[in-house]
Length: 265
Image (cartoon, rainbow, N blue to C red; front, side):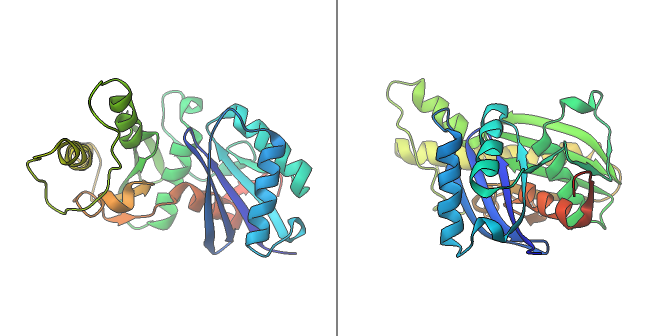
């Protein structure tokens, strides 16, 4: 049986799709998360991506999904069944993880937050405590001590903050957030002022919050950055011990490979 996997991280901004084997992630693609999707549009996109990889639906051992957008998840599930002949496995519904959930109301934790924390613990097992920092639509800080997910913080997202500022100010432009400098500059243009304000501002927020969270965690603490902006921010942010841009997808891979027990596998 093929061990080729299709992994999907359905977030509020984008649907990240990765082809993988149980031991490694491979090619990654991104589709916008939008209301105009239909099951057919998603299914045809999946077939195109398979073709780009030189694969057919029959080559897939499984589709594994983590979603925080229920409506799009329903469409994605239908697309996989109709076009790939696969009923996707979903986290958390089809999997259990060997990690205690210490949230006051465990069901309130976003699947993406819990899965990123699980993946961080599996990838970095030797440190007493961990902080996973995910730069997505929101910026989340999730804490693990031993084998217990403790909870964390939810802050504004880098790109969603930029979009909100451009939409709610008359004269400020929408900027690209390009990482061009390793040191903060006193901006002498609106573009530089905004670019450095956002990038170095979020780097400073990350450093400051990680230092404060470390004071609440036992033992040495390892900080993992993930999400679309993590790789660039790592150039100017001193908080990270490691950067794994696709930590949620790594979690899905680890679940399939044996990191969690799957009721349907």
